[in-house]
Amino acid sequence: MENYAQILSERILQLRREKNLTQEALAEQLGLSFQAISKWENSQSCPDIVLLPQLADIFGVTIDSLFGREITVTASDVSPVFEHCDDLPWPDDKTLRGVVAWGHHILWHDKMKRRFSFNTADRKYAWLLRYDPLNVECRCDLHVEGNIHGDARAGVTIKCADVHGDAEAGVSIGCGNISGDAQAGVSIGCLSVGGNASAGVSVHKK
Image (tube, rainbow, N blue to C red; front, side, top):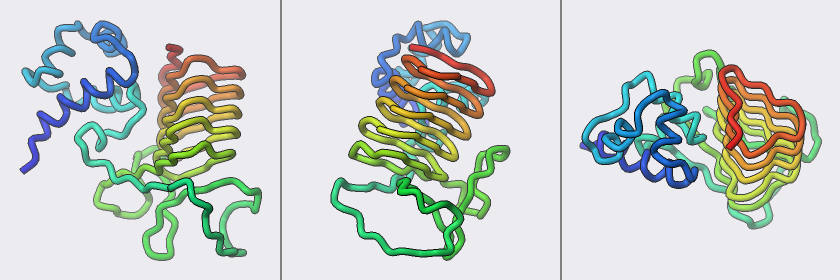
């Protein structure tokens, strides 16, 4: 059986360092003392369950990812193979789109219930791109190891370097600079936003 307490401890330490956050800075965002963060990272205690969504938003990951349970779909930088279909529910505008399907049914993200509209065993899905795309839209978590040179839209979270256009996420955005507008259902954490920024809970500039 997996030791999820230990995994959570290691993930918090790893993600905090990746975000270049001190224990004090993370504690301040959560309204806690830095000693509480230290105890988490040393496996002396675990975060209260009600803090998990906030931790996931700060780090720009899913709650499943905090426990090492994220399923990642990887796209390499080789040329994609295209098969033309006329009956897809979006315009033919050369935007790179990633979807999760259950058989022939596309799974759309329910922003209110924070899950997909079909039963997927409560799994979260992330689309990881290892190159810099232009416009990107996906119905799950969008993770880009680099910049997005156009607009970015995701059903759940966006995690990347810079977005050179607009960024919109159902839950949270965690990135560097956003050149255009930014909108998220819960939180935005970035260096700067060139346009308007709005979020259901918080807009945090690093």
